[in-house]
Image (cartoon, rainbow, N blue to C red; front, side, top):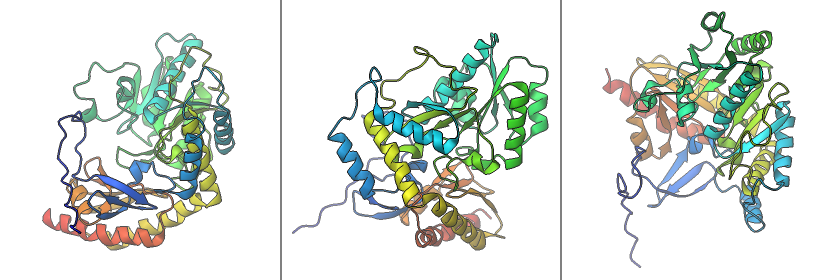
Length: 404
């Protein structure tokens, strides 16, 4: 029997719009925290679909639940009641301590809905031109409004004019926030990621979160925390802001909520829960039965398999190992983040590590030019974390030596 010839992956397809700088890899299947490409090469997956594959690849319970749901109904319409929406919404309300939920399909849509909530909140108070505080290095999406809220000039370039109504401030700077909003009656909300993902894995400090919560209460602003990437157990709490012991008024979710099935949500507290009324907002695909079943089953697996505790334990192990192996090297700055949302920052650009790591059987990402980001499935074991360290650290040392 003749062995199959390797599949050659083209750098770019003439039929697919050129919007991604893809690696020459096509994945065919996965199991747990490991994936295989179409040529049979295996990889330890430290990217998790960019914080999406919460319970890993091919989890038997998730697969069975989705197959069962596909055999019943995939999509109906929001013209009708979707009982699984109520099931998932009730669970998110229980976990967050908030009040109600709007379902959509992506993080971008969830963030768009949050921006609309803030504007409607302002208009309902008689503010004709509401303004929202956003942050340097933030990333909230690529629609025109979420792009305008994003703090990255590179991704904004070529898409002006941007949407007005945003006030940008640095992270963890209460004096800067107060100075930027002093005497401005149009401010209606403060909007940020509890841990910036695309911006380089920068965390809002717990103390800062508590101060912003108090300021929003004092000034009747909405506190809107984007948990699209850092939520759903990734940091060892259901939502990253919970480390500070606070509750937001608006919380967008997506990514890990459906373990790979597209699902987004906006969870609202009492101050924001009744801003929208019928006709104010909507979606075709949001809240469909398949996505809702994925969300319900993802949370059930997380609870029954102790994945929040695992994210903390394995994340601490991985962070300590990376720091032990690389600490003190010229060109290494730090490992930061929480749980299984980690960023390893160097003093030089490290985009070449995407290919080099893949060649050595490891999937990672590089963000903000100099930060290696790891957001694996929450089922990762300490042994798999050690595999990540064994592959990645020699590549980092090599890169830093080249940069000398």
